[in-house]
Image (cartoon, rainbow over all chains, first blue to last red; front, side, top):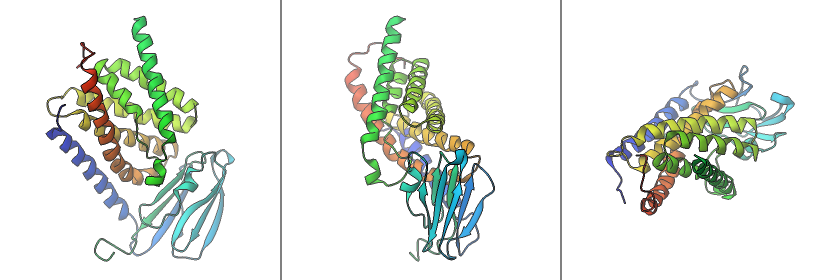
Length: 124
Length: 170
């Protein structure tokens, strides 16, 4: 059996670095201090809600008339309900930290979280 | 010619069976994140690249992805699988030509990472937005794990199969 080679480590390292790089940039892409939920349908303009504002239920209609509900509560957001067949978006669950991302492909809707979580590696 | 057709059809159905079978593995219980799967069907693509060559691998991949999304998934999932599959095939083919420095595990990791990158690009096109891009790190980390797993399976497989295949494409 052939052993692991040097090139394998380079590839694994490159994948790891790429993941860390994108994650770092993603976590810092919005105003610090607060978290925001970005909702977009079919690439349209993003509707942005503050996660630290009041709790709310947002009912929307996505692509192909697929209805879905976004719930913002207790500093987190989620797809609470969707008419889509697979319900992957709902199964993604609550998003409560920067870089969090849920998508409903049939409805072409994305929910993503930006901003600082208020915690970093040291204060956590 | 006819023998090759039969062989490729068999491999395509094997890949299809693997991709359907892995839906039954409740990976979501272990890692509750969407879009993460083992990628067992990629073993067949690597097998084809290793023993048959680029064109057979591409044909098997195309049949598997098309039939796979017909069996469940639909158009969006077809676009995602196809983009991931094609990018992964190209990357793995490029790395297969450097066997002295990269083993099948490295090829598999790179292929898995390329597959996820292709999927993210496709979903960015479908959603015409950049939001999916920020999910890529999660998928890349999963590619590291699943790629190592399928690559190791592939190493075991080739060790057994090298006895039976005299003509290797590589």
